[in-house]
Amino acid sequence: MAKVIMSIQNGVKTSSSHISIFILKVVSAFIVAVTVSLIFQEMIGFGTFSFVLISITVLLGLVKMMSRWGLALVLVFDLICILIALLLRMYVLIAPGA
Image (cartoon, rainbow, N blue to C red):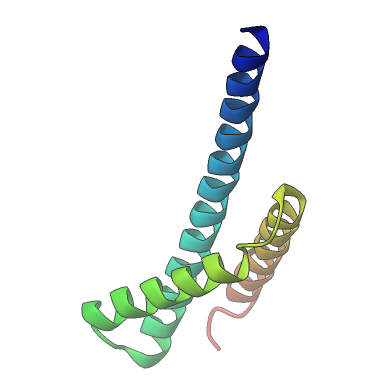
């Protein structure tokens, strides 16, 4: 009986770990997808339908790309995205008239 309970506990622990990593991947991909869609919307000036279409396409592409990644690689990807966002923010603040 103890082996069955240990097996169930290990299964729940593994499942919750995989689910939390998947949710982190989806949230990271969603933030990047919305950012890319907003950039394209400002550059090209398309409507809401194209915004949603590009958001979903980028989101699914990033989730597919991150499907084999573990927690460490997702966190490194997030760090790189944060650094790129800070670089873009610095560019916008330095060159407001360009």
